[in-house]
Image (cartoon, rainbow, N blue to C red; front, side, top):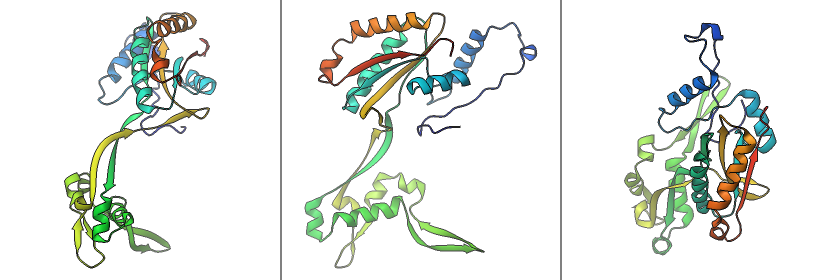
Length: 257
């Protein structure tokens, strides 16, 4: 119902009237735990439970959808992710923490094409020639239009999905030479497939990652106080890691939200 990151989504679970439950006396906290256990079996997902009104209020107040958030600011994405993982493990160890989650910042597969410039010059090619071959193969090129009544649909030609995923096959793509003939792409460029940034979030012009959690079984203020003390004692060396560019900020939403 609102914009989210590519790897995020919201699902609403509508509950039946309590009188229609198999066990009408089941406490809400137990039901949530059972839902969490069921969601944890879904591969490749991290699920966080909230309620519609609480979710919106939390998001409006601090930009996050959980009751507690630790925001880490800095310039080095790798350092932010590493420190965020440390904060996540320590937050999960605080009694009452549930749905502890580190913002996903990496894991997006990226294809990197690095031209071999000396070989390009030797064959009379430009970097743009390599870029054109890669763009046509992966993104596609318009080759015409299909006319259906008053509608015109562009016809795009590109490699099929399995071929676009085949790194060795991409290296065999022909790059036309100025004097005629062609040479394999792998001869004039190095192709590598590696994991890259999934998203880069910013706040006040500074890169940031967020570790979020909800709280069950204790007061929110006491949880945040204990978390601040734990982070202050165990992560005192983080500012040195980021050369003074790190800011740790724990925020909490009103309990009635």
